[in-house]
Amino acid sequence: MVMCVRVKVRYFARFRDIAGVSEEEFDIPDDAKVKDLIELIKKKHPKFNDEIFEQNEEADVNVSKNGRYVDFDEELREGDIIALFPPVSGG
Amino acid sequence: MLSEKELERYDRQIRIFGIEGQEKLKKAKVAVVGIGGLGSPVAYYLTAAGIGEILLIDEQIPELSNLNRQILHWEEDLDKTPKSLSAKRKLEKLNSDVKIEAFVGKLTRENIEDVLKDVDVIVDCLDNFETRYLLDEFAHKKGVPLVHAAVEGLHGQATTIIPEKTKSLREIFPIPPKKKEKFPILGATAGVMGTIQAAEVIKLITGCGEPLANKLLVIDLAHNAFEIIELK
Image (cartoon, rainbow over all chains, first blue to last red; front, side):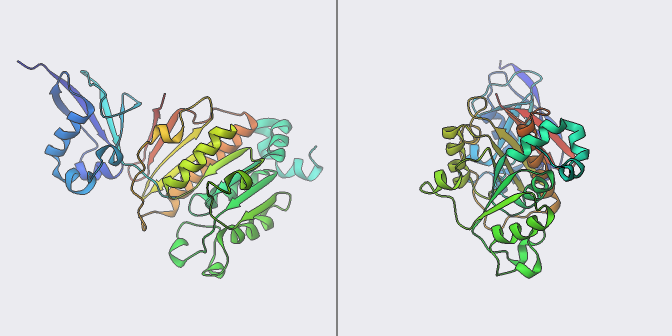
């Protein structure tokens, strides 16, 4: 049996509009990484797939875990708070 | 030494960082790279604060659709005066004590050392990561702090790169976000982020407060959400 952990996902800026909520919880396998969570988010909110993730997913989202900037291979634990931020480049 | 006039002009901020802090501002040279939505408030507040020398870098000419956010460019400048010169003209009227230099051209690998020589702080007000990486490389090579910001819509981010102390911009954002030719942007968003950049520059020069070193400030004005993310 796969053990599950619960993490909280917070959406920022445009992502908040796409998800329709500012935050929500996900149950994920206890060895899951950020990239696995992203897959779950895409499944739950197909608009992320259509509007955000085009070619290189790591370029399309910035991720923090418990207030610290992390990459897609970061492992997740029970109670982690993940925040997703759209990248910006304008001036 | 500050004159009587300068002591009076900067009185309200001398109350924050002292005469010594104001003298540091007067001795400093700051480069503002990109005089658009971010660069306008940055250059405006740095001029008002009495930075000794400000170098404005931009090669573009203002267009009508720039005016919702690029507040240093006015209707009279449209399709005519390059942005660095348009900004220089107004800033010199705001504060004649500040030496304003304008470079009408694009920063390249070939000219960057020459254009940015003797600069104490660089402010990244660009609209693309290609030139940002160039600034980042130069900043690390020469040990010059780089104040970064970027904006889109009602959303912005800022961080201050200090060579030897913080990650480089390329380490933080290794994959450049796709450049959009026409991205949505509200003037007030650029105003908020540019003002934060101006404050970062003044903090770096005077030593007052704590800069956004190894911290990414993310602001979402649509939902009044402000986050600081640790980058270490």
